[in-house]
Length: 236
Image (cartoon, helix red, strand yellow):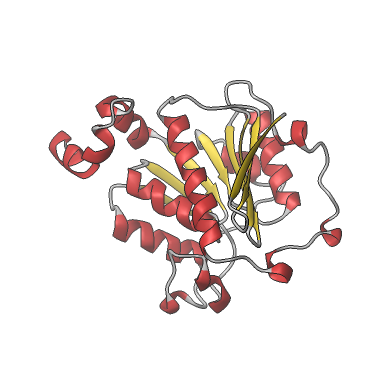
């Protein structure tokens, strides 16, 4: 992309004094891994691609189902039954062909996670189970990678940044994962379709702030209650 095209496409970001051309070049040169192309991953992928993140890895092993469409906004009815990763790649390429989007159509586990994460500057965790969240967190600590974390259920969500500039990580907040069988999830309690858009947009926003070295509140968990419309921060 030449300078004139870059300015034309990203001018509304470049006009921000705190970003400018130098910040946009950081975005273009960034390598971000999004784990999970579901409710949270969808808006993250959408906004990072739109912002011009140069390399965007998308990891998921699931297929699009009809019940996904109320919240996973990068898919359409024509996507049902197809690979989420392949559909997500098609979406990114149609939105911004300058993004180098890398499909990772496999389940992330102990055997492959270090190799996958090592290729990226930072990780956005849109996974939906505690085993994967803790595995991602622990690997980011080992590899010294920053992590943007989010979770959703019903009307509520959480957002945090871990392991950034020597900040704390998930285990400093919650030392051990709870037993999955004791917990409710979106499959049992549901989620209002717009909630992942709110939380995922916040995650994308934090990711772009990390990339462009903008000020961030570290060691802080943001709790989002969209039923009562309350936002609370907890320091840890």
